[in-house]
Length: 278
Image 1: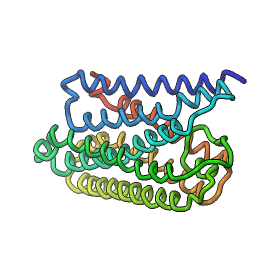
Image 2: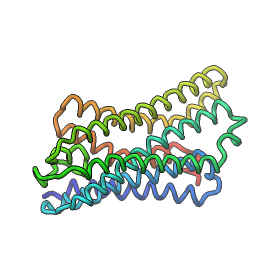
Image 3: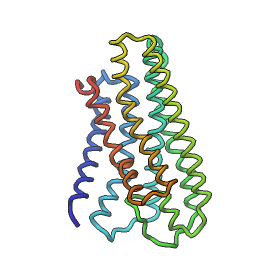
C-alpha cells in the first residue's frame, strides 16, 4: 500500500495535537489570556484534541495493517469518547456565542456577568452534559448482539455502522440517536443564531464604523468555526437521510472527524492578534 494516505493523516493528526495542546498551554501560561473568551477556547481545543485522538490513531493502524482487529469493547469506547467530545463542542460553541453577545451588547456588565468563576462552571457543565449524554446510546448499544459480520466498512467505529452488523433490531437505538442528536444540534444552533442576530442588530444600530469593524473582527473567527462545524453536520444528516453514496458519506465524516479538529487552533490563532502576540 502507498505510504501517501497514512503519512498525510499522520501529519494532520500531529498538527492537530500540537495546535490544540499548544493553544491550551499558551492560554494557561500567559496571564493576558486568562479571560472568558480564551478559557472557552481552551475548553474547545481540548474537545478537538479528544475528537481527533478517538479516531485518527486507530485509523492509521488500520491503514498500515489490514489484518488489525479491534475488540468490540474498544470500538464502543472509542465511539463514546468521540460522541462525548463532539457533543461537548456543541455546548461550548453556544457558551462562546453567549460570551460574544454579552461582550458586545452589554459591555459595561461584561466583567460581572462573565466572571472567570462563572466561565469555569459553564465549561464544566458543557463537559458534564457532553460526556453524560452518549452514555444513553452506549447503554442501548450494549443490549445488542453482533453476529452478522465482524467487518465494519468504515474508517472509525461509527455507531450506525455497528447497527448494520447487529443480530437484533436496532430501530430503538436509531430512534434515540435521532431524537437526542436532533434536539441537541437544533437547540444549540438556534441559540447561536439568536445570539448573533442580537449581536448583529446591536452592531448595526449602535456602533460607529470603527466599532462595527472591531465587533465583526471579534466574532468572525467564532462564526467561521460554527459555520464549518454545523455545516458539516447538516451535510452528514442529509447524506444519511437521502441515501447518498457511501463514499460521499465517508468524505463528510472524514472532514468532520479529522479536518474540523485541526481548524480551530488555526482559525482562532491566525486571526487573533492577542494569541499571535503571546
